[in-house]
Each structure stands twice: as structure tokens, then as C-alpha cells.
Image (cartoon, rainbow, N blue to C red; front, side, top):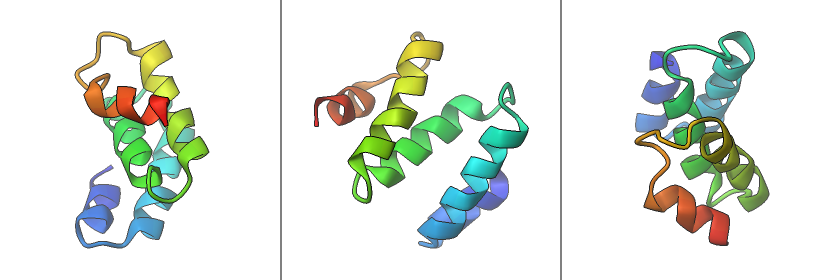
Length: 79
């Protein structure tokens, strides 16, 4: 998770996505999974809206009361 966020902060989106996806694969119930879906959804918003919606939908369905189920996620789902 921390490696992925570091890549994201430094503008290396490809590496960030790669590491977010690795986290999702390896730690489906991990402590950071909600934030991972959220960050991935935001990153993909300008790259691949359908992929962005997939990540947003994970939050909506699996974590409806999450702080990450917010106006940004709702906006993505409307696109």
C-alpha cells in the first residue's frame, strides 16, 4: 500500500496502479482495501472510466458506510 501511494504521489501512475492491483489480489480483506479501491477509482477516472466505475462499485456494494463512499464516487458513477 505505502509503495503504491508513494508512486502515486510522485506521478508514476502506472506503478501505483500495478501495486494497488497487487494489493487487491493479495489482501482482499486487508486494512487498506477501501482506500485502495478509492484511489484506484480516482486514478482511472481520467484513464479508463469503465475501470474507474468498477473500483467505485466495489466501494458502493461492499462498503456502503465507508468514508470513501462519497461525492467523488457518486460523481464517477454518473459519468
